Length: 339
Image (cartoon, rainbow, N blue to C red; front, side, top):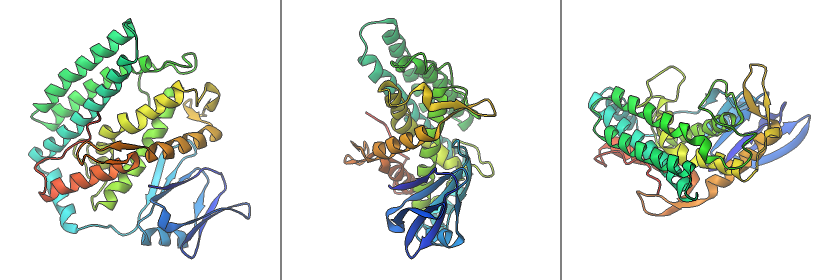
């Protein structure tokens, strides 16, 4: 589950035997064995040697390149792993309207159920108030949409219900923020670029989750680019984005709320970019990365296997369950339903 995040501008990554070495201005900042890594993420002006790329390819470690503000640029991955028959099954399923709507429906049901859990947990922590009533009403609204998704006959209808659920959830997201209200005001989801501190934090965490989910899919032998809910688009990890939908309320949204409500981030940790968007400062980005790695190490009961596992393994478990479904070992894809 270890991911190496390199944020120091001007860093150079190279290979020394089976070790990744990070240098900056001729000084060695870090040496880490390749066997301990799942992935490498480079932010901004960070470069890698071709020999290191070869080493990472040999061990199945993907290298992702982001802008210094966290926008995805490119990913370097070695030879495709896994059974070619599994990928053929994935491609056939993506071309089958019945199979596609079944998986898309499961993914969206997982997302809505987990979003509802986030709202209701917050409601239970409030005394009787208009805010609590609003959160409870939102939970009821999501329950109704969940019932509609279960009966949706087409992928387009599933996407429509997913949009309704997202609007309901994010309309109440500001109610989940109880600290630093003058610095963290959320009036709606904004992307490319994020227009406020909350959106900047969410977008950064979603980028990290997408990277880990794409790595999990590749490790399970699936193609991250061929999805069921998200339409195929060149350069887009559609299947990774599919699984992120059900995972982000659990892994990303709750971490963002925790960082804000525990005052681990403040308004001073964000700045306006040249494009008019909002981004984390260098120092704050490092703190969020540390919190993200700690979050992945926390253990919880996975609802399908019934065992306590680190949260960072949830994307891998969901990738394996999807692969088992596509192989025909499971009648349907069991989405992550957080309790």
